[in-house]
Amino acid sequence: METIGIKKLRENLNEYIYKVKAGEKIVITDRKKEIAVITPIEKNDNEDKIYQMVQHGTASWSGSKPSGMPVRVKSKGKSLSSAVIEDRG
Image 1 (tube, rainbow, N blue to C red):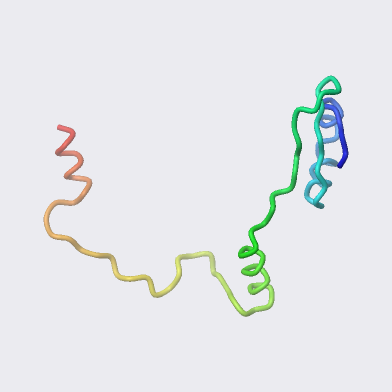
Image 2 (image 1 turned 180 degrees about the vertical axis):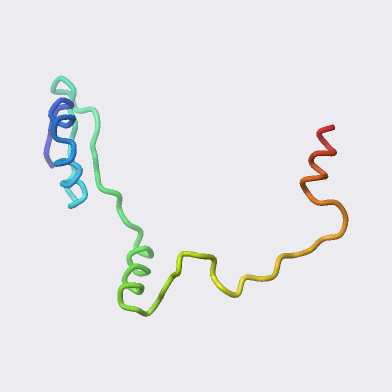
């Protein structure tokens, strides 16, 4: 785990972001006092498994809603928005 001051972080931000992306943790100091730690986000195991399935072609996603969604439920009477407007008046 590398320790750096705020000034050095500002001057070399891109370099440290790449290190964090690679899995390294960075301790940030202010006047030699530790104030924060930058750590990579830990991926959820399910996210990794889904990503691997997409990579191997066993799953796919087109970026839209899943097909086969149920038909929108129609209700009788006023719409929700008109009921809210009426209630406000």
